[in-house]
Length: 70
Image (cartoon, rainbow, N blue to C red; front, side, top):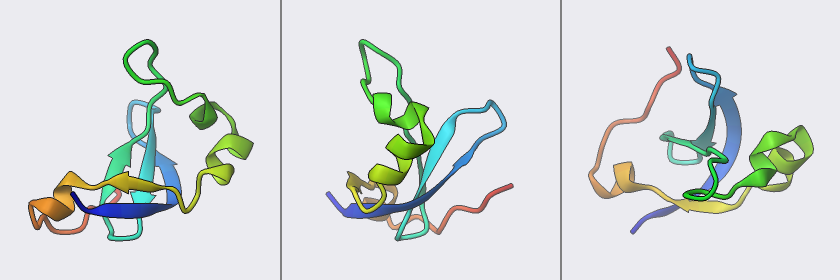
């Protein structure tokens, strides 16, 4: 599985945080316990501290084109 570092964030149209990966793909980074525990996403300091952290990018594995903010 391709690992890509997070390089930025934006919110989607439902006000959920989305990580922007170095490869150009986007991935939601929700804090939704108990299924997903990501308390760092709730604060600007937390999000900044995770820049550079690598996430598995399924879109890279499928050779999908880069995402675009609409």
